Length: 329
Ligand code: NDP
Image (cartoon, rainbow, N blue to C red; front, side, top):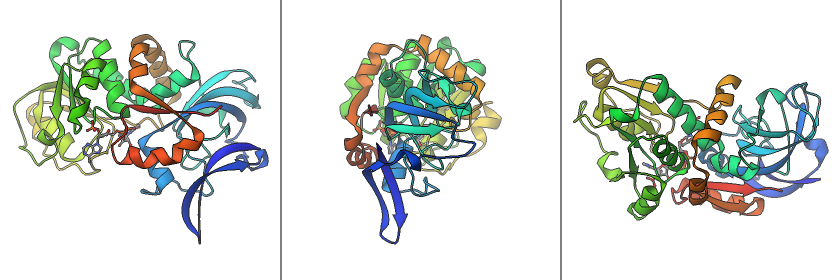
């Protein structure tokens, strides 16, 4: 038996609870060839949606949520993995269509796993988590499109959240000047301690704006979407790059084409879930080099598996600062 958060949906309704689960219930079949003893997982925005049922993230029941995990291989019939290997997993529909990381054990497809970089403990890897891995994909996109620190400021929206906090810390470490946008003025000192040069009010961004505004940003990491993303695009300098990875403020994009056709702005969509393995390896390699681990401590709060369900509503209410690591075993 092992402990897991189990989401069930039946005539009694949609519910999540910490349960004892039999090993025999672990996923079977071709996408379940490596059993991992989970050391740590995290709470991401998507996990919040899954656990509360606020959005139809979970598409099979019962489901163990948790879109990422770090741990050690217990047994494997996959040629790449042996018992004792340290692994990390992000995405691939885990925690949505395949049992995920908010459990003491997971049985996964070995093709989805990447080696846990030697630079990190499992808890540090999960402090980074899908949030940090996604930020690195944003940074790689900025670099690929030629955005350099000397080109000007990079704006990060939803800055006090998980993705936003890692984005501020990582971009600052790489020498970029970071403008952090937050709805929580009380977090200004926190964002400055992560490396933000300026902290701006969310209300300057989340209302309908002009198709083109004064040029301010060389690049952007947007976790919010909707009017915020539209305004960031409208404020981006000639030739600048906006990476869009989130929808914390809405899924719509009430924008015009003006920034793209008059200023050559690039809107780069960032998906971490189905990203090919080579990109994942590169992102984790760069995180091991480029992230200041002392900043991770400022970003992270640790909770237990038993505390995870209660923490999810706080996360969806935008009350959680930075990252939440779930220490599993
Ligand atoms: P968090 O909940 O930790 O952070 C989201 C932040 O967005 C909040 O802290 C808040 O920041 C801001 N925010 C919340 N509600 C609103 C609102 N109504 N209007 C404007 N800003 C708001 O979530 P994560 O950082 O884990 O994820 C952020 C987004 O990125 C989510 O939409 C998530 O689904 C997405 N994501 C996408 C991935 C991908 O592969 N593309 C991977 C990982 C995440 P503040 O208080 O500072 O304003």
